[in-house]
Image 1 (cartoon, one colour):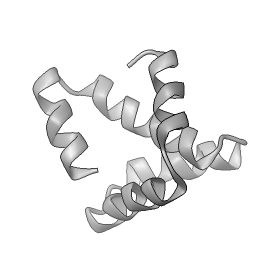
Image 2: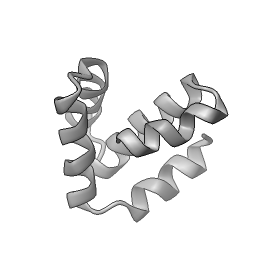
Image 3: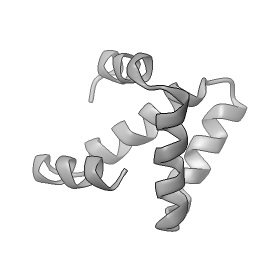
Length: 74
């Protein structure tokens, strides 16, 4: 994902959606995503931008076929 796509995703996300994604990370013990999210929020990112950044990191780390699985699990 590009930087612009990350910002667009963040603009579209509601606080409840962020909380739902975060709960999914907690349920799967995805500590890397949780730690990255918490670090970004502490550094001043909004909840939405931090969440979108972590999702983008996951998407960029995976192949195209994995994007749909990640979206489903998040």
